[in-house]
Length: 318
Length: 266
Image (cartoon, rainbow over the protein chains, first blue to last red):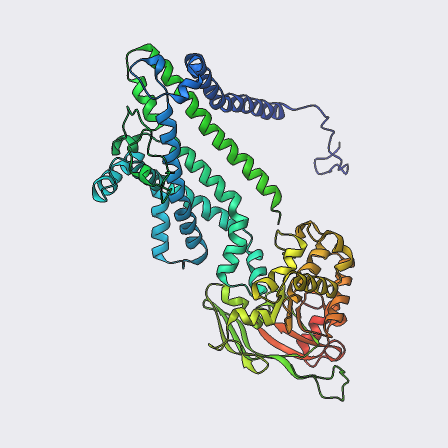
């Protein structure tokens, strides 16, 4: 090359080869590190659940006999059972669902479809979201003042059901709103276009198409209610109870009785807590067995929610 | 309904307007989307509305069955008449209006229900049939008029969303027809369809004008030329020119119309 001002006319850059450069290798190592970390943190949850299940199984499996489900609590650990507790849990959750589902769904639909957007609805929205974060024992306090003493419902199935309904109401409302919002606007337009009223659009289309999401939210809420303890302790659930609530059917007119609503009760988590707090190790086994039953009930409800959602989603296609 | 001759020859009187916009202004909040639009939609013929995006053609169409009522902050001034009656009058029930002025949307939007239930929905909520047999009859007639009967007759219980895009749009047309509207509004009904499905719908529109008054918004000038008898050209919220389709496309009076149809903007 004679002079510095001659410029090479060859524009093809030198070949860079195909091997990974140092920089690429570094990027790869970072990725591998993250994947490893991801596997570890993901398994924390699964492993914990497995360990929990394993522990409960080894402690409580032997106690899971038919008598355990059919016996009332007893001073003798081997004769004690969870009859009052699981019946109580079932009734309380039933009352809870009966109140929380219509109220929560109606509130969610109203807020989403009907309410005007202004500062009042904004305040309500913020409140509903905040209610979901209120500690459950505060609901117990509220229930103690308003339901137990204020309305004179006492320490009853009805009080417990209403308290838990209040507790899961935000969950139901938020699930309803989100599912309703997920229904495409074009479907509403289609119904308006053939001359449907707003209520017809809502009840014939929006609600049915939103129902998979709503039911998922409801079931998740109910499984939360099933495991709640603090607010029920607060309103004074009994921990030792050797009778069932009044049966809902009678042999004489009017054949139906709602007396059970006002009967005292206990629920699974409280029964568990009662057993755990005893020094006798035999009662610890009872507690583990009850915990196992409670865990299976909750997991079954969540599993059902997932199955139900998948099934309904596959039916409704936009 | 008055019987009107359907012959449109230049020398004859034009068919009377079935619907008519008179000085229509539309506001979305503070923004004005339509400026004093006066436009007839003539009886038993197809009126096409063309113009670039955001020109107000869809806005005008949606005023005809008060679909804008649903949109928050939308306000309409001026008058829109159906058979001489202002549809924005307090005495007019919007639900009844929409039963008389049906609509087909841009994207096919069948309900996630069976083909039968899609078509039967309107007749059911308006109580148009006394029994199941009558309802079956309405569903069959509507699907036939929409040119879909042959393709779906043996699977009426299948979901409407399982049909192809073009079939879905014809299902939506059948759904609109089922309530026996007098006017059918179509908001870019072919924009989501392939050319073959589009051709089928265009043919269908031509048949439908025997029985219905049709207003169609379209992005495609060729489509407007093919299916319509009257064309309105919108630009920036103003109605620039309205006339018989042939005149608009061959001999526009306005320079802007000329520029748009020859593809110089839009």
